[in-house]
Length: 353
Figure 1 (spheres, rainbow, N blue to C red):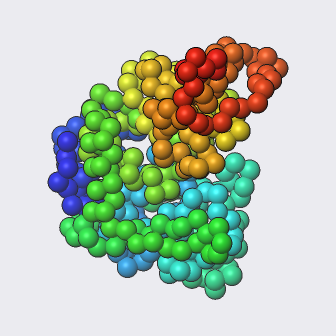
Figure 2 (tube, helix red, strand yellow):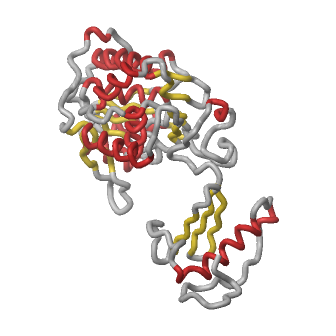
Figure 3 (cartoon, rainbow, N blue to C red):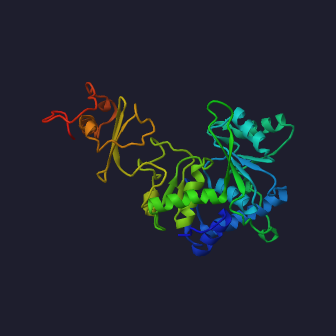
C-alpha cells in the first residue's frame, strides 16, 4: 500500500514503478491499459497540453463520461499542476456556465455528442457567450488520437510537489441556486482514498468498478484507492442494470477476469424490498439491513438489531421470500397492512424474523 504520497502524480509514478505491467483500467470495449502504459500516455498528453498553452495558471474544466481518455486527461493535468474543474455530465447550460465563470476556466473539454446530448454545441455556445473566455476541446475515442494532444515528455517541467495546493474545484449540486465551487488539494483527495482503502481492506488481486461519473467527487476517492493498493477497475460510462450489467455490477464477460471485488456497484447477490417507509435487504453473506426512511431518509441507522422493529422485519422478510424468483406480473403482490414498530410481543404471529 502506497499511503505516503503527497501528490496525485507522485502516487501514479510510484504505482507505475511498482506495478508497471499490472492492468489499471478496463473499459466496455475491452480495452486494457496497464499502470505503466497509463503513466506514459498521461505524460505524452501533458506535453501536448503544454503545446496548447496549458499551464498551472490556466484552469481546465472537463465534462466527460467515465472513459479511459477522460482519466488520462485528468492525470495529464495533474502532471502539470493545473487546477482542474470536473463537471458532472448531468449539468446543462445554466450550471455549466456558472461553474466555468466562477473558476475562470481557460480550457473546457467535452465528449461531443454523448447519450443524445450535444455537449460540444453547448460548450461552443457558452464560449461565444463568454466572449471567448475559454477554448473548447473535444475528447472522443472516435477521433484521431481520441482528441487528446500529445508531445515529447522530455520537454515537460518538473511535476508539482506541494500536496496542499488547491488544484481541484468540485461543485455542489446547485439545487437551490447556481452550483458553488469547492476547493480541494491532492493531499485531501488522497486522504479520502486512503480511508476507503483501509476500510475496505482492498488488495492487489481485487477488481473494482467505477459505474458513476468520474467527474463526481467520488471519482478520485475510488480511483486513488486503486492506485494505493494497485488493483484495476472496470469503467462503465453509464449504469443501466437491466441491459448493460449482469446484476452484480460487472459487465457481461468480465467475470472471466477474476473479479473478486466490485466497488462502487451493487453487492454481488442480494434480495430486497421497499414497502411504505421501510427498505429491507438480505445479502448472500447473511447480513441484513433495515431502514425506516420516515426517520432515517439517508439510510444511516440499520435497525435490524432493534427489537422494536422485529414485527416490521419479520413482515418484510416474508415478502422477500414471496418475491424471490418472481418474473414480470408475478412480482405484483398484495401485502396487506404494514405493522408498526413497537415493543416485542410474546408469541407474535408476525415476528420476530
